[in-house]
Image (cartoon, rainbow, N blue to C red; front, side, top):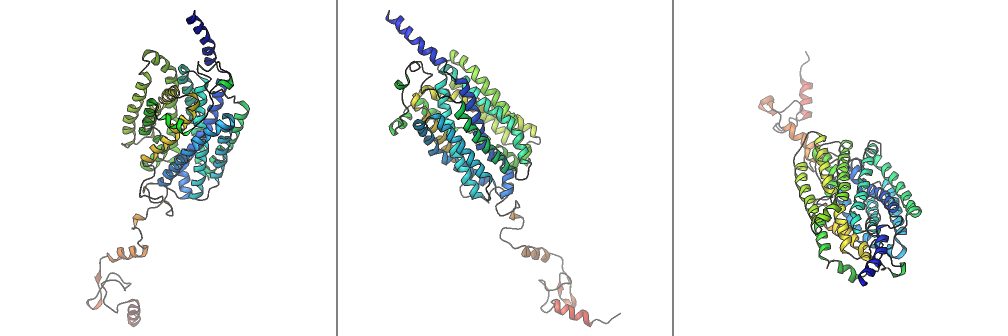
Length: 474
């Protein structure tokens, strides 16, 4: 009797957890907002070769922009999640998207590297807020067995949009001041996306997709109270700690940040052509993340305790092998790089449908936002800095000789004539190596102009003019 009554009492909660109202509309809205945020955040990486030529920058400047953006994300990510617990997730999503759009527009007006660096850093700190909040909303909208599919659809949508936007970004690169127009355009779209959240997004309750909480009233559900003790407690969860270490050691996102710049500066491919690798990368990513989202539930049923872990291990190993052959050897055709980028995108696409549900499964609903914020910002920043995105002892302006431009150098290396050596001194050295012919009275002179090394004292220009004037007329 007790067993049947307990089973009956669980059914309403399970049914509600599997059918959260407005969850697919919310997923569509969050996907659109994330497309805009991610495109704006990664726009500098895409158009940087053209931007570098306009502002006389090099790869060192790009590394500094990326590093400071990640550093700014460390306090910004947890701050936005904290703010969501105070004013609501819908208002916070609107605020972070609109603010990021405003700083993106400001970056388009930059006249020097300092202005660009400040605007891009603030833009990164703004748009990072939507990522952990979105992950927490997806976890609250779908039960565990459906989260892989939801994440696959979400991240697949981001990459499909990237495929569509790739040629658009290439068109901006071909325009005069195209990087400015790209920042202005995406900044405006960001502001519009933020307003779209206010109109269409309906926030689910915290823990709404959990069977144990789905049938509770709103006042009975856990509140998002974040304390220092609760955040420290996240590090006592073994699975969460392993996931953070895995992300710390992963190099997947390096190809996203420096992929186009690598092809331009190290392989000599034009900026507009290098951008085209975003198409196969996005296709590989989309196919893998969508496929993994639908296949993983079956793998979970076959291997409940090891299925997701095996997929993550496979993705890491394959990415390392493909990245080695794709970046350590030079190929003549862009088509070869396109194949490697497609495979790299597929390996990276296997991750989101696996690691996001793992984190959601081991963290309490009220702490998921902070867990994702720490995972996606703090450890992400440590990983970027540890991998040397800003090279120690190499200040901006003294980067690779093959960079698009050097600060103050107009894109031309001074090593052609030696740093700090006047051009006249070089001309003098070259002329001093010319064969000398015998001069009058046993003297030597390299040419008729006189005044050179090896010429006897007194054989200067004035002496030669006097001698020519004394010659008898013919």
